[in-house]
Length: 310
Image 1 (cartoon, rainbow, N blue to C red):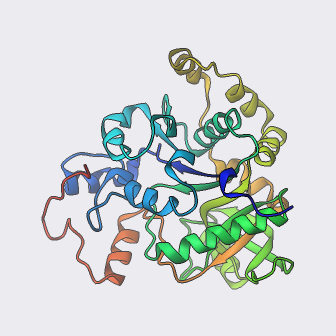
Image 2: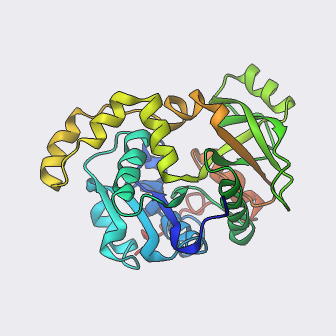
Image 3: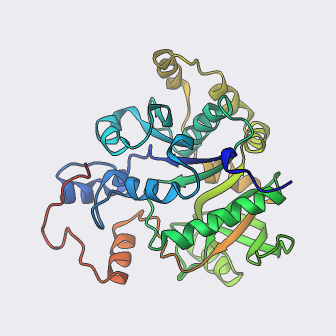
C-alpha cells in the first residue's frame, strides 16, 4: 500500500483537556484559570494556535478537526476562527483522552472512513515546527507501508522522568526507504515508577509524544476489539447535540494511553524523534525548563500579566 494521498490526510487536534494541574499558573498569567492550551506563554500565540499553525503543514483547515469541551467554547471559538464550522467538534464534557479521541474518530468515520489521521495534542510545545512535521510526514509514509500499524512519535529522553509514557523499541523496521529510525514496539509503559523508568531509559526507551498516525478504519477496529463496551457506548450516541449530551452522562472517563495503547504494543511502530525541543508542558517545571533553554524568563516570575490569546 502506498502512502496516503493528500486528500485522504486529516489532522485531529485534541483541545478538550481541562489543564487542572496548571490552572494556578494560568491564573497568574492571564487572570483566569483557563486550560493551558488557550494560554499565551511564549510569543504571541496560544499553544492551540501554535499547534494549528503546525498541523496545517500536514492537512489544510478543511481537513482539520479540533475537539473542544462545551465549557471552553467562549475561549475556543475566538482562537478557532480560522477554521470552517465543520472543523470544530464539541464534546459535552471532558472524560479524559479516551472518549474524546474515540468520539472524534467516529465523527470522522462518517465523513471520510478511508482517511489517514495524524493526532496532535494542543497543549505541547515544539521548538522546531519544520523538523517536527517532517517526522509526522515520515510517520505517514510508514503507515502507507504498514496500514495495520499505529505509528507513534517517540521523543529521545534527556532524563529519567516518571511523568511520561515510555515506548520500548524492539527490532528496527528497516523496510521503508529513507527511514532508519522506526522500530517495532516491545512494550508501552504509561508513567512507570522511578526504577522502571530508569530501566526503560537504559534499554533505549522513548517518551510517548501522543502524536500518532494511523489508518482510521484500522484504529476503530482495534478499539472495538480491545474495548468493545466503550466503543459500543460511543458509537450509539445520537447525532442530535442535546440528546448526545444527555447520553454522554453515561460515559466513563478512560485514558487512551493506559487504557488502550499500553495493551497493544504489538500493533505499534515507534518513530524516534530528535532535535525538535518537544515538551508536553504538563508541569510548571517542564515549562521553566523549556524557557531556560530558550533563554527566556517565565512571565509569572516577571510579575507581568499576559492577556489570554484572542
